[in-house]
Length: 211
Image (tube, rainbow, N blue to C red; front, top):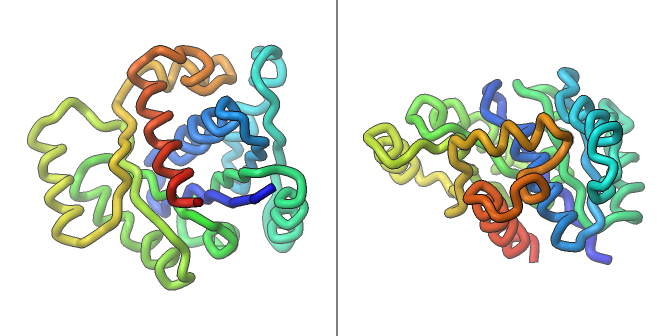
């Protein structure tokens, strides 16, 4: 079993960290991986989704779950790496020590970012931490609208700064919101949707980066 840790990190709030963590973890599980999700964000959004999943989505594939922080994070990640193939960590916003610890432990750091120059600029702190720790990292454009001026400006901003971004992007789709409200990922709730296709494309890139 080759265990790998994917940390979802972003100092800027409201970027869609928990959404990305959930969609990626459920896609990994559907693809046959054993998966754990770890919530180290005090807001507990991932924890709330897991509780909803336990009560409302009884037929959904099992995900291991931990809510942990501080010095216990490293111990918990070491334990989970012996038990599952993939660990997805939802980290807190801001440059907190827990977030830095999760980045340092990661095999891959994904930084969700809405497609606007301001959001891309605000991602610099998180990208710098990943770079300084020597972690593989990439931006994931999230809530992407149909192509327009703002989207093109965001792509230009990425190119100007030389930031690495995955080709797969998650659109601004109601299907993502609806799946979370049912304790599911979109690959489970609407497997034939464009949203599910986007998540599977994202997973393919992530798995290639972890190979």
